Image (tube, rainbow, N blue to C red; front, side, top):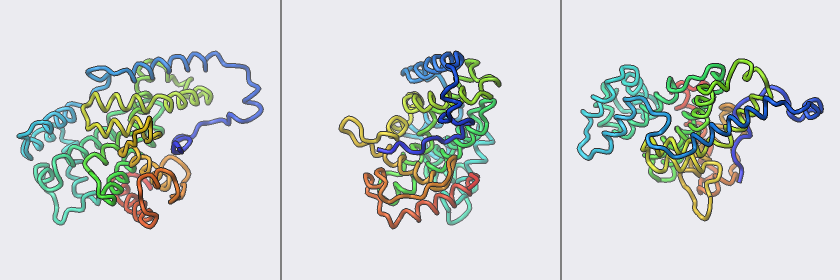
Length: 310
């Protein structure tokens, strides 16, 4: 089964050149590989609470949504603690993502009209893609990951809607399926592994991206479980490259695998790759070929309205 794009990032240098292959082993490469293995293993070990916590407004929003008596007024009080998030919730609620018939004027109104879970999704999108992750020297890579997160979230929601499935989990599953990359980059930076010299060395950057690719699914799944997100979210994080595993078909992960193909078609972090109706994730999800242009175009319009440069 295809595992999606080979890389969402440009890595300087070509590992296939004769000059590269004849270079003597670099002890820095081995040392960084060992240290990044420790980062990956540590982050992918289940712990309570998770090593990386969500900001307070997100944590409280997730908590109150588990309470049976939570209503729109409570949601508004929680979100209002962070004026930036509150403003962004209103902006997104009025965007092409939800296309309300009349303007939504307050967070309470948003919770009533588009749903409390939708407000949760917007708040988490704003928090995780705008200011939660800051890694000096990897700004471009972080931007690519955040842009892809938004695009895959939008595409997942659209595909779930077309298939008549549960769209409540689809947006979050797409949004956070690659969060493991961000957590690994952040932890490696905190550990002092991503110095200017390291990030200026193509061989070391390549090791970073290889190790991030190796561990990001397990790391993301542990984080989603620790944050007490819906199980489909951690399933998508863990299985989006292998959504059929040990006799089980993880539908949320399959959905995200298709959404990843939409992000590829839109050229988010990679050279644009046209949608192939015969791609295995599309066939396994039962998505009709004739709806693919609609999925790509609507995702493009909505993601652009949310600030993704396309």
